[in-house]
Length: 144
Image (tube, rainbow, N blue to C red; front, side, top):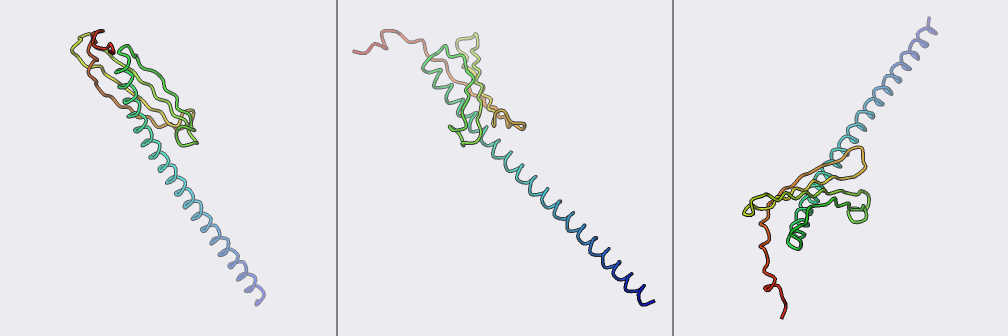
């Protein structure tokens, strides 16, 4: 009878130990998953911030290009990873809309994608209007 009790106690202790290990494993899996999700969210937030900055840069680039060349029609601007953060590349698409009415401003639309060629990509869009460059009088641009 004493032998049966010690065997049942050992069996009960083994079941308790396995249950504790199982619960600890479940806790570790849940905690690890939570950390991974938090890191992914932080990364997405950084990517979204990067796309907003890139879209604004594209607006500034287009404004400068329009000032230099009134016929500028936009472009796709690929930025290498080395030019950005060293790990991911970006792509900017700049579209220019010139209204038929000469008195209306030119619309610049920029869309930024970052990182390019990734499963998850952040996108941001920016728009701006700029006054048309005045038709320059050739005599005014002549240097003395």
